[in-house]
Image 1: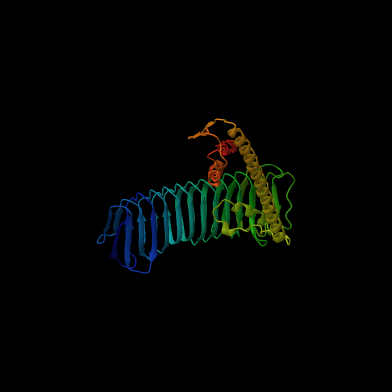
Image 2: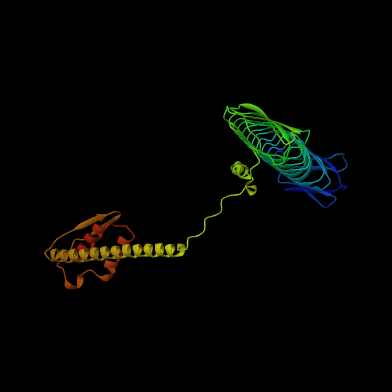
Length: 402
């Protein structure tokens, strides 16, 4: 790992050449610039304007909060936070996370982009999902490939192409958006402003009850438009119509490929919370409460445990009885073999890698009965599954006849 630290003024201008890996940058309350990389090359040029940084791997930066930063490109992910100066970020090949920054200019992002607390945003193409929370100025994005979820924008919102769903809540400036699937808008229109929204499927607009706007509505079919406002009555089978709410001071142009609903009712707006699923910002959504634990839950668990223990004990007892029966059969066969051995029987046995010579070497004597140690040896082999039960019975029978 390489690391360098240099002194700077409170608001330095920094240029980072193309980064072959990931970028992590954060502002701090020191008039110093610290750079670290896990690669073999790191160079800072302190006397230059801007300060120039190059590296050959992942890069970590700590810089004064007032710094302005320009990065040519990032080959991996990028995460930046707590910088008040301007950020100019080139293409990012992975995911992007930005928090607590000044004005931001972005090139293309190949992954998802999650942004929070910015002074303003101007971005190129974002291939994945796009999430923005709290932008003090305008939000301009060339295109979003996935879903877009936007809240609390202090200026205009302009995204001409969104591949899937759009959720937009509160924009203080004009709006111009178009999505390939569903669009959900929660807006407070301002006099003299224009709002344009196109949805490939359904469009839901929630306005405050005291809104003043002229609505230019186009739905997917004659029955698809619904305006739920007091005193508003639409013509039957209205596929395209204009509706005035209040004084009609704002102009709103809404186009939907399927249903188009304009409402001031909170319950219909709450139903749009489903849009939050999959937008990587689940903290902003209300999920159903966890069902309460039933009163007899503990007793049911205890009963299940007792039943399981009883079944286990029963299986052990059954296995024990089977083992005792096997031993009795083995002993009986051993006694029978002893009788045959006294009559001069000869026997040999090959079991696996064991070659047993069981031929008697003379008349059997009472003191030559199978010993406890020999019996235990055979039972241990049976327990370790080195021989089968049938083989054990044969061995016991043959040894009893030695």
